[in-house]
Image 1 (spheres, one colour):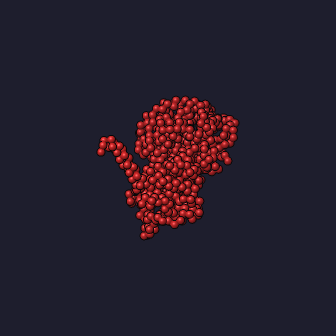
Image 2: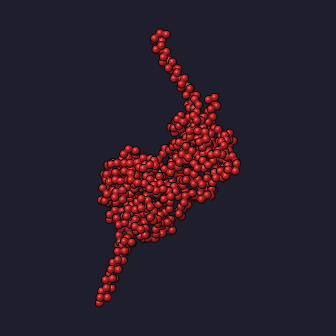
Image 3: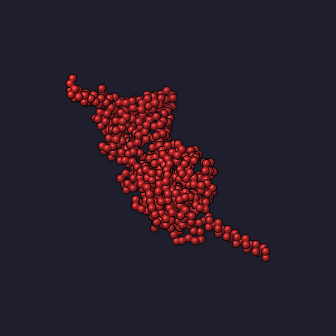
Length: 332
Length: 306
């Protein structure tokens, strides 16, 4: 009797564990909506780059060739925007990266002005740092930025081949990196994220892989290799770009020339591939920037088709008619 | 002399003095300065890198490098250029052999490479920020005038081929001549090279003539003649034209290594084919041979001055 009960309890426990494991590892994503097209009106974009989400699930999109930031709610409804082309505080010259701190303030890498600007969630200018150069707080084209749980800002200082760190007031803290450390030449890494342990994740488009460093620049691990089209199996990339970490610690990477994004465990184990598509067709999307909100919804920008897409997670036994792109499937 | 005559004489004397000073400036000699105009950053080193090093490092000239176009349609492609057959410089882990980059980043990259190359000889970089006729958007090559080019709207001014016929742009080059008053100016081969090079050369040629007409003290305008081992003028018609008889021969034997160093800064341009040829030249030099860069004098303002 006891033995039967034990077996029964074990089987129930095992089943539940398997279901939970399946839910975690095989979560699928449904395409929810897409917004934006080429233009300079509210809600339109010209070559959007990075995207960030705040604690209220509002989205901030870098509208690069309009030299502005646009803010949306999680359903893509336009809220506000700020910025025009120029050198003055609050103006931009080809912005690229964006991040939001724990207070809801927004940081933008103002790439061709070689500076970082800080704004309130309403777009009011707060502070800035940077100029062209090689010293501390100087930049040669700052690209991706990310903020850790302690509100330390990390900036990819691309043509100085280094990462610079700043506090919330944009005071310089530290810098590390070199071409040798990143194992690259010419093609500087553009996108950065901070994982749940405070390590730095870099999306290495040249070598088609993800690199994880400690926050002071010691290499921990690299994963990924080149694969495109039919050769682009799970965990392979063709020019990975945007990278972010969800609230559950899982890592999301834009796999631009495979027209998809991939999800990994915090240790780099492959979990899921999600192919992007057009609103009503099979248009391929060149995903560049990526962000995940508290509910696990994924938002990606398409740099060349001037839009943002939203994907919603659901367990493998759920799903909807719009779900597509099972792992391993390759669009032709 | 009566006081009122003194009062009248003073401004006359002043005017005569100013007139004399002005005339002295107009007929002044060019400064000890060498200016080299390249359609793109690496053109300067390939065209006249040894000559620049000789004049700037060896003879103490002020060196001014002018990068005319702010971009390149090629960027680094990660594959060999047609007919050159050399492997890419950059390590890639299985990428397709075609790896262009967007115009925006290409501009940044080439600007930085230009600065590094100029620094190798102590030259100052000047950027005219003209646009290229073609750019890359993602992996797609896009041509000037197309809807996609207009949408992308890359930073920069007019494209070189159009700018070469617009006074505003030519005057910008004249202003450079007024500022630096170079004794030597070097340009691309007129009429023979690929379109972007020829247009840039022609634009400077027109500006140089205009500078002479405005009595700006510029010296000689040289254009590139045939390069040793033929590694400059790739297309046969250009080679024929470029083989016009050179009248200037600069001995760069002592400066080939510096030319190599400066050329190697242009990583994005797949420069290894040039580097290999420069390495051969260095071997030649080490075995006792001489090495030259050759030019054809297009305009000589020093003769008129004399």
